[in-house]
Length: 506
Image 1 (cartoon, rainbow, N blue to C red):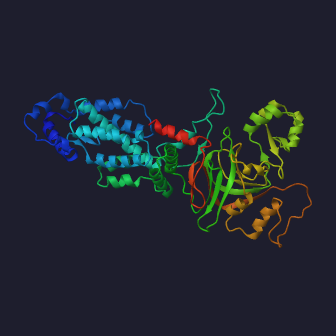
Image 2: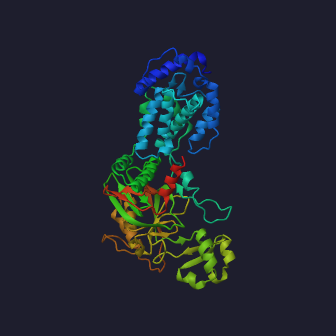
Image 3: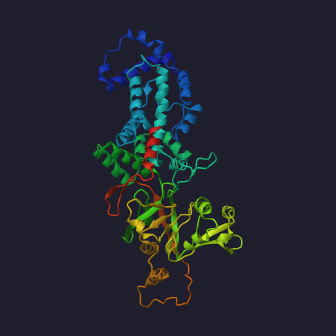
C-alpha cells in the first residue's frame, strides 16, 4: 500500500483534529489557502519511502535481545502496526502511558525512550515537519514503537537483561586468548519465546491492550515494594541500587515452594524458610573470593553426607598444589592429603608423584575425613555444574569476619547441624541423634543405640533427603531479612555495577 496525494486531505484533517485535542496552541480554522502549503512534498506520505527509512533503521546495532525480533519483523515486509495515513493509532498512546510509568519507577529512560517517542508522535499530530522528513518521522515512530513494545513486554515479564548471557561472558580465569569464560550463572529461568512475542504483537489489535500491558508486569510483592522505596528516596546512589535489584526480581526463576533454602551472596547469609510449619533459620555463610566467586544457581538438596572426604577439584590441584607442593611429603601429611591413582585406587607416596603426574589428570588428591577436614563434618549435596555445596568448616573463626569471601566457591554455613535437621521431612529423634553422634556430638535421647564398633576409622555416612528441598544461590544487594525488614548489602562482586552498565547501553 502506498500513502499518496489522494489521501492527503483526509490525512491532514484528521491530524488537525487530533492536534486540536492535544494542543490548544494549534487550534485554528482550516482555510483553502492552506492546501497550497499542504501539497508541498514535505507533507507527502509514501509507504515505500517509510519502508526505505525503516530498512535503514534495521541496520542499526542490536542492543537488547528483543531488537532482533523487531528487525526481522520489518525486513520480512510485514504491515505497519502503529502509523496510518491519518496519523498514529490510539494504541500508541496506551503503550506510551505504560512506558512512562515504568520509567518513572526507575527504569532508565534510554531503555524504552518514552520521551523521544512522545516527541515523535507530537510531530505527527502537530504537523511539525519543517526540520524533518515526514516519511522519516513516520518510519522512526513506527519502528521505535514496536521496539519499545517488545522491550517493555519481554523486559517486564522476563527481564530487560539476559542474566545467563551477561554473567557467563563476564570473566575469564586468565588473559590467554583461548581461555573460556568462567561460568557464574546457572539459574534456570523462563525466557521470551516466539509464542510470547506473537501475543505481544497481536495484543496491539485487541481492545484489552492496556490490560495486557499491565498483566506482563512483575507480580512479586518484593518488586513492588522496591518501586515504592524508589519513589520515596532522592538519593541517586541508593536509587541505582534499587534499579539493579528491581531488574533481578524481573528474572522469572523457579517457584521455590513452601520450604526452601535461599543463599544471598551479597549479604553472605542463608535463609532456610518453611512457610508450612513456620520454621525458619538465618545464618552467616562464607562464600567464594573475588577470584573464585561462588556461582548463582538453583537446585534441590538430595542428601546429607556425614564425615565426608574432600576430593580436591582438579582446578585447585592445577593452580595451587601441583606448582607449589609436588613431592612435598610434609605438606601432604600436614593437610591429611592422600594421592590416589584414579584407575586402580592405589595410594601413592607423595614424594614419588611429580608435578607432571599431578597435572596429567590420572591422579586425585583426597583429604581424610573427620576433624581437620576442610568440609567439616557435614555436607548438604545438590546436583550442579560447579561441584559446590553447602557444608560445615574446620575454620569457625571465619564467621566472625565482616568480609567472609574466603572459599573456592563452596558455601560454608554457620549452623550446619541445624540446617541438616531443617532439610529433613519431620525428622524422628533417631534421625537427629544419628547425625549428632556421627559428627561427635552426644545423642539427645537416652535410648539411642550408639555404634560401639571399636575402630579408629571415622565412618562416612549418608542420609537421603526426601522430598528434596529447593535451594537457590543468588545475589541481592537489597533484600528483606527473616523478620521482613529490608537490608542493604555491599556490592561484593560488583554485579550491581555490571547490571547498571548493561542497561545504560540500550
